[in-house]
Length: 275
Image (cartoon, rainbow, N blue to C red; front, side):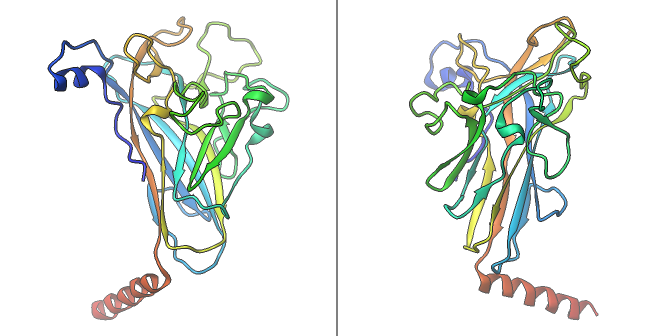
């Protein structure tokens, strides 16, 4: 199972080795992954009740600024979501416009922040994606990974070592803005991306929805850190507040049918005792 930690900085690595340290960025972003099963409320952990019924999983990724300097809004991030415990018979939902486009393309390459809409959430589709860069669902054994079409290898594999070919999340500041661009989102807690997948064959397992540290882009050339950018001024082009991310993954538990029955009998017993 892929476990998410805040990105380990060069400062801590150097200290542990007894070597001279280099400057490193603070953790400035909390990334929360929530999911809904068959229309249930969004939660970080859920138990699928079992049986052979169809299950639809709607995943929402939220970014929250937790840095110390005042910020005006999210500038950009790049990441590759990964679902572990995925099976060959599971199937993903397609992305809007085939995973291509941008905030201003026709048809749009972004979606409203609503269940059942899959892709980058407006206004975070500043980066235009062509057919070669389209957002794509890749399956690697028991993993589902989302990245641009050119990143065919798993994270860390050939051609996918910088994280830069992940899902590009970005919005415009006042620089370069036109009347066709969507309004700026100044919130410091924003929903940025939605994706979905389905399974209709019940197999006892646990699925984890995560973003590995090496799956982040916006890499600092000097330190190698993967960063999230936030605007400190609306006249900045790329955002000067830069730090690493702490990811809180989501988990789906699919117990064996007998275990599910035991949970049910236990609940009935507790209700009877309470009466």
